Image (tube, rainbow, N blue to C red; front, top):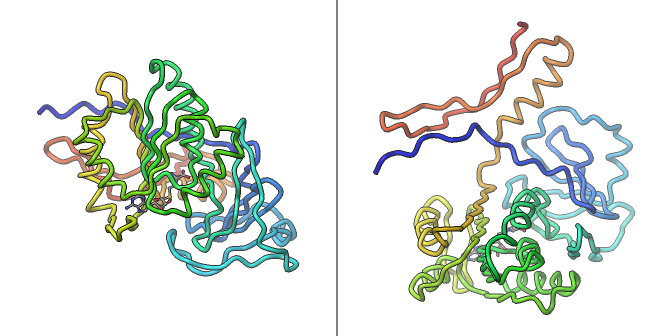
Length: 301
Ligand SMILES: C[S@@+](CC[C@H](N)C(=O)[O-])C[C@H]1O[C@@H](n2cnc3c(N)ncnc32)[C@H](O)[C@@H]1O
């Protein structure tokens, strides 16, 4: 098979926030975010630069996640002024969702996924009468609800009963109880394989697999082992004429932006000149590109 030509330079999908979310500041290994009425501090390894806002702004945060700095690691929330652990509701457009403090540092929404939501809202209405969307590892269901809101029939799969209950709660809050969403508590790989055997086809597949996870019957998910066969199943499930596959991975936490933003503050701002950044890539004989490292290059002229 011929190797397809390279098409795009690195693309940055930018999300500036949600109606009820903003990244307020970052630095010294942490980020300060606002989810609706609650401000949070969470660890962010890539924020090696200095925060821009005053200490007093950070000190006023409602909750700080302490403990494991691993992306998937467990930890605790320290609440300011002994506030309770009550849930709160956030919104974005027609979407309403419950936020709550989990021991895995998340509060139920990944706001940067809005870039995927926007694309679905653009594309799904042009995909026929009732385009079918498969959301694997769907968590609290925000992408499923956006797809349903855009007129799709949705199959949402997650291994956790708790996550599915949370997603259904968000469905009710968003006024989408009548929408055609199938909530399925299953192992994503097993379910996808079953759908292939049934000859099912989807117009859109979303998958946001964790680095490590377990299905409801303790099926083990390891990203680096399981992703290739999973993508193979997706290839068999996707509508080859009009399909869209949106794959996200949080397993690789470094970005050239870490260097870029640091050098922007530390070199470009005081010295002027020119800053370039990206990845250093080895190209194999077959044209396959292997990323070895990230770079930022400052030059006076
Ligand atoms: C990080 S979340 C995905 C975030 C979500 N896509 C979003 O944007 O809000 C990962 C989800 O995968 C689920 N999960 C982990 N292992 C699984 C497996 N083997 N099969 C199905 N779901 C699994 C977890 O229960 C969790 O809800």
